[in-house]
Amino acid sequence: MNIEQENRGDILVLRLSGRLDSSGAPELERVLLEKLASGKKRLVFDLSALEYVSSAGLRVVLLAGKKLRGVQGKLVLVGIRDMVREVLDMSGFLALFAVAATLDEGLAQV
Image (cartoon, rainbow, N blue to C red; front, side, top):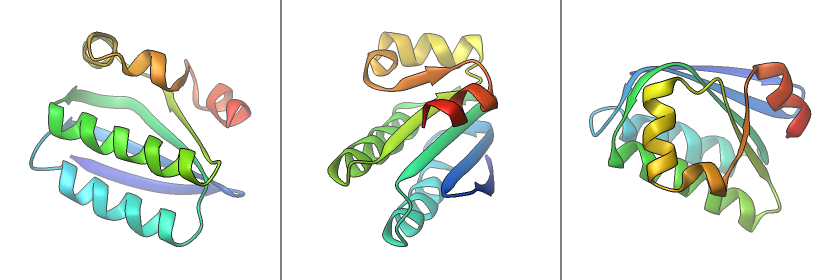
């Protein structure tokens, strides 16, 4: 999995590509916790290049949501591909998080 980071003002955009599974989830968690510790409260996960997500990946997304809620932050998931959307839907994540079709729409929501 590859993680690209971009700051849009005070919004952190994390672009995830490839497979978010047990091999990539620890790196995403490390980056995420580091950014949250530095004060980031507004986060967009751009999933437009993410091909697969496992339960390990879902755990990191859930961790992000919980940590951000604790500091009155916000998380938006954008650009979700069909296979990943199916997993997020079955696990109930689409009801837990704000979702947008495009990065611009996600930035407006966060």
